[in-house]
Length: 373
Image (cartoon, rainbow, N blue to C red):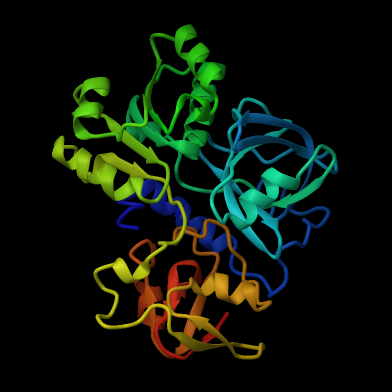
């Protein structure tokens, strides 16, 4: 997801994350696209084969892919806000499910083109009806928990960060949930608003529970948030959008007096500039190459500022991975020799740090390193 940015998760989510970690440890290298074996647990599959049943153009840069099970078996249930990991082009990326948990026969994945996006652009440009995709089962901790989050939620979304919000809103509408959900959605222009007509229609039909405000071009400043959402005291605030939105949103919400424990950030990728993090060693050139040696594979060179997981995949070594944001822990590796920069996003356990484990998706080799799976 998944981070000082990913934030302080409540105890329930910590338990879920730990259970997920224990149930799904890294598999053998090269197993990323292995389909789920017959007779395996249908509720926690490692792989699902899906067929593209429909492709919907949401905006000029965004498509929704409706995916149905290729083998006809029921899909695992999910919680609104969760994601699946899509395998393509020798790597994988997590995409939030946009559809409602009330609809059991398909997952809708809404994908936006991003500059240089390896998988997102491949999906948007090439995937058509009838194509097959392989994903994980649903996962992630960015979902509503009534015990800890209450029944009054403000969701700040930017760009494609509206996708998990859409699933949550559809969930409220389909199940008649008595939950107040206020979406404040920032977009670059009106033509770029994903789900605009449906969002506005759902808000009009559920005035007591769903509210949607669009913010065009302007930043979601403290003043804008206060003006639209009103007092935040006692309310949970969710944030999902581009990486750059997270520290800015935290700053603005802090100005409004919102406590950190009442803010939840969706995990959203590895930091693009790890050198900017406070604990990056001073004077260390991120573009300089070092040597990485993974057990059972030949050594290779990679820049210090490239995530270790990406570098491994580029060289044919494919650990299990999902969130690619430091949250899920599936890509964990053990550092046998050398030094790595572990980004702030990594949600490591104390035992991980004690015994030399790190999440390769948000780890950056500072020196020549040797790692084991």
